[in-house]
Length: 324
Image 1 (tube, one colour):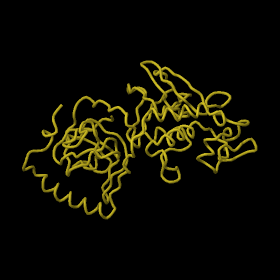
Image 2: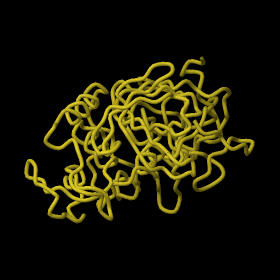
Image 3: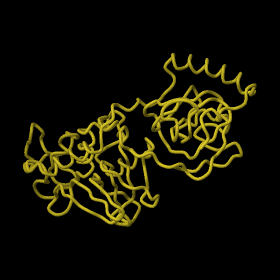
Image 4: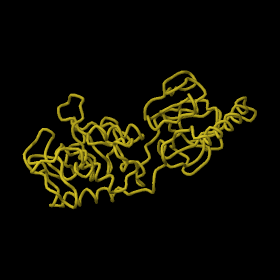
């Protein structure tokens, strides 16, 4: 692995003037409030805390089940009532801990409740206020792709406690269930899931990790024990026109700086937009920073690429940088 001091372009690089001008311009634009970057992650929650919340709900007999007959939208349950008070409430829907139960399929509401009450970053943003997570199971994949923590089953990723695992039961490309990973080994992933089985309840389940029903996993942003993924084989050389802030995850915790010049990156993920006036980019590039701690396998916005334009992530020869 190359050390950070060998990452920068040689002195006298013709991009230096552009860096100086761009840095000043960026500072002015930022002061005017025109730079859009997602809020940094809050203090890290642990994976054990997430599993603990899920386990508590599994054992909470006052609300770990669906009540009444299957209605048009699902069954009455506590977790939908907690988040979505506009959902219908029939005479079969009780009130528990001040929450009127509501009728809906509720696996996603359960998983969101677990993440929110464990303190997972971005899980507390309401869906009507820009939150990615909703009452739909596929929103957990959206969370992962938005914040750069999505891993397909076929990627070889080892699921971690506290991850959200999403399923496609029919194999038709439609995600229709989500659960919380409680643990995993080389062959099996163990989960805690809401709206599982018949009758509809919170249940502990297990699956072979190779099961075709598993679409993939979204890791929670801001979790202290989220493992750093190894870099993709090969390096892709790019020119950056200004010093770029480095983050632990796309738009997450600031960790350091990638200097302007010619740099290498490993791969890309889709994440929070970085925008200055009409220039913008959603792609984030995994790289090794020139300064900071940690400096390896951090993320910078592809906005700083000197070539290609909005929402492009290519190396200097025009090759599309692969997904992480």
